[in-house]
Image (cartoon, rainbow, N blue to C red):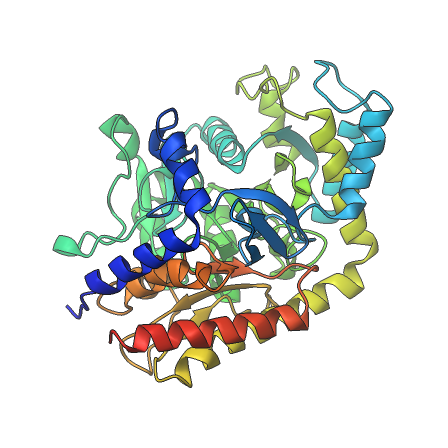
Length: 466
């Protein structure tokens, strides 16, 4: 297996970053006295420490050390309108001023109004809101297993559906002993449960057919992202998603499209519609919340009905204290309404900026003598994409089409693309996580030019170690 030793590079970057951001470093040490690893979300807790943010507006952040940082992470890819967009913050400020917005423990008109927008824009018959994409996918799988009276759940290797029982297998790539995406990601789960999770391959319709022939009569559902997120930011092919729809119909399984990332990102609605595929259930989050914690399970009335009284309340999708929180629903209604009203100007601009960002990332490194390729490009269905992951393949003709290509250390220099790149870019006041990024409507051409110069300096730093 091809490998490079980046020990010295990482040590130099860590030392330079500690000198660059001493206040964040000190706050991290204090935080570790009370918080595990200094925070509450593992992805944010980069080594040697994360930047501690004091303000965020549009495309930019400000940290404790006074650095203005160009941000392409944008709230875990949720902030399609940028950080703290005025259209949302003004609505929230007005509501708070009028004694509305914090938790009440009652229902209100916002739930119905927000659900109406989601149904109209996605073709769903019913919606139930919750607070995170993790919970939404868990409830969707519970519904599928109850509806079909079957146990097996199928997902793709590299697909992330949240830290819930059926989602914690097949996420990270393990090169040792040919494990690939077959491992369970956590201790504490009963083997009987994880044995019920079947891992198939993204964008491989032949493998999908084989798995349905083998397991189809026992499958409760197939859950898949139309645009895979943590698995490498790649769109499903038309053939793959349509094959998934045909096979789930044929075998009586529920098709769940996880649109927590894809929903309202390519147009003001569900990505499945662009494929001509109507899922039985779909999960939404991130973009629909407008920067607040909102997620939803949407889809067929007969399946979601298992939650309600008429369906015997068979599935305990009863909601938590903060489900459909007033301020969250106001932000969601405001953001989705804005995206619907401005669809024709927002999405072409995002596609154009996304394309320029990917080309800028690749060109900056290639011209400095380091071969680099981005994922995040669209395809014949999802023709424009605002997202990108930068990777460093060992061979200049490598095609990055599946999670196995992006995360296999024999194919790409994973350490350079994840650990080193994030630290090196922070030294240039640019933020990505780790290698992931997306543009928002708040990003400008000047921001992309800033990124280009930052990447060229990073490339020259890397080149001295390769």
